[in-house]
Length: 328
Image 1 (tube, rainbow, N blue to C red):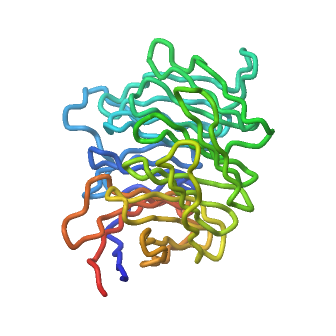
Image 2 (image 1 turned 120 degrees about the vertical axis):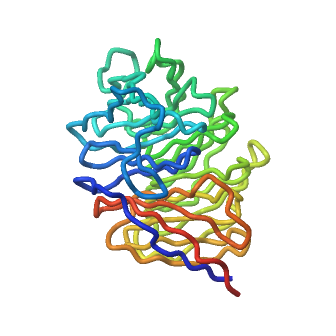
């Protein structure tokens, strides 16, 4: 099988620096964050800046942070965006009203074992968020507006290793954490403990992505590879496939809403689509620069289509791609 993806359109207003995160929301908008410190929301059909139709007259897009934004997590209902800056300022933005519902200065060491957050992930319930940073420990915080950022627990990883990416599973029962030394660990939320750690990568793992049913986990690494894990049996998940083909660091990954296709972006200036069952790349899209983030459209694709995705990279553009159909 081979697939073709066409460049549909770009965002109407380029970011002032690299786009470090994109997320296609359930409401068919796209949220992007950039090294220029800005966060924006776009209408996926046109690439124009999006303001919700029922937004209040005083609707505002957050002012750019003085430092770059490095981590983005959008709620499952598409109504809120959690994002984090280089210095560890975590913010929750209501995409419907424009209100900032919470901010947390994680770089202020007012609590024991507190550290600046690098990566953040909002839980499916929206009541908590996870974060990790320089120590590689995983912290759980309140995401409620009246107590936003309050640390509920810290789970020690056992080794001093920088936490590169954390992500809640779709059911909220587990959190995946990747590290700069190539590890991927799984935390059981109810037990509040790491239950397993994989060392399949030789270099830093930049990104992890869950399948929509929570059965599979995909990791992307600076060792130019992606690794797929089957996590259906807690405590005994194992790598089931390795995807090779990028010629430089793999910076981001995602899994399609039907669980059939993987997606990756790389410093080699390409995006690859992978057939998970066949363990092979079925499409390669050449971009103009390093690809820092990718996100599938959450809506299931129509019959005969592989769906659509969005990407962001070093040229500051958010780009939409649509499938041209499947061929033999």
